[in-house]
Structures are given as C-alpha cells and as structure tokens.
Length: 205
Image 1: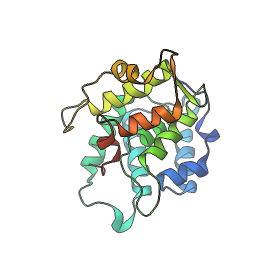
Image 2: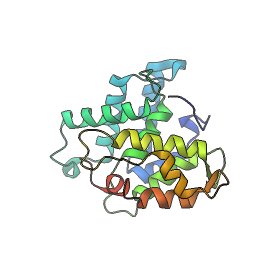
Image 3: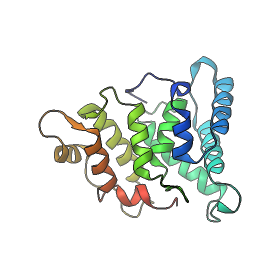
C-alpha cells in the first residue's frame, strides 16, 4: 500500500483501547488476528476476498442481535468492503496487511457507538496515534497519506457529496509553513471539515 508510517504490528497495538473505540470485544479481535496470521503466515498480506471476510466479521462483532440495522445486507457489506479496499490499495497490488486493514476499518467506519461517548474523532485520533512518527504533530507526508485515503474513499459515484478539494488544498489551510501541524489541530480540521464531517459521522450506509 505504498509508504507506511508505522512499523508496529497489530499485536503491539493497544487492544484495550481498540476494543473501546470499536465496541468489539478484545478477545474477538485477537481471535480474528490469530486466524489471519495462521492463514497468511509470514507474508501478512490479505487479498480482497479475505478483506471482505474480516470486514464482515468485525462489523458483525461490533453490531450484534437487534442492533444490526436491517438495511445492512451481505451485498451491502461486500460493496462497502470493496470501496474501503480500493481506497487503501493505492499502489494497486491487490494486497493489504492486517495493520492496514484495521487502520482502514477505524478511519472509515462512520458509526458513532451507541450508548457510549466514542465518536469518529476518537477513532481517528486512535489511528493517528498508532501511525505517527512525530507524536503530537502531523507532517506533510503523513497528512498527504491520510487525506489521500479519505479522498479516494469518498470520491466515488455512490457518495451523495463526493470530495472535490484536493489533499494539497486541505493541507495549505492547515500548514503555517513549518511543514507540520499539531495533531489536535489536524483532527479538529478533518472531523469538522465540510468535505469529511458528514461522511465520518453519519450512520453506516
């Protein structure tokens, strides 16, 4: 998926916090990760078929029983998973790592967790914390990667309000010329920007 800003494996992530920001039981997340490792070995790469399966498993693990919206069908989930996969497979290899998968799931999952204080902002901050070589700040390179993924995901035919602003235009509104932006400022901008806020905060589908 091109350049990575973190060499940490998923096993090194803060899984307690991950469980909190997704609503998915930690034990279930660890189980899915171990299943993935067993099926891919040292390669640590998944194709679109495996990505669809894992996306479905995480979604259903977060929304169980009567909480699952009736509108979410197998076709809906598969279609959504394909959009996410395409947005993060920026180099066209047809492969993503488990870390990239989790990054995509958190960054693009548009549900605020019911009955909790967890928001899209919390999930976004969590992703940045685990993929930031300059803690507390977002560099131009890192900002490009995040904004480019969001733009690729939301600039599609079936989005009611596709993003028309380039990542460079967004970055120019944030950067004071130093080439980096405080992470809190970056999070505030993205989660309140007209290009992203409705997509990041609206209910899934």
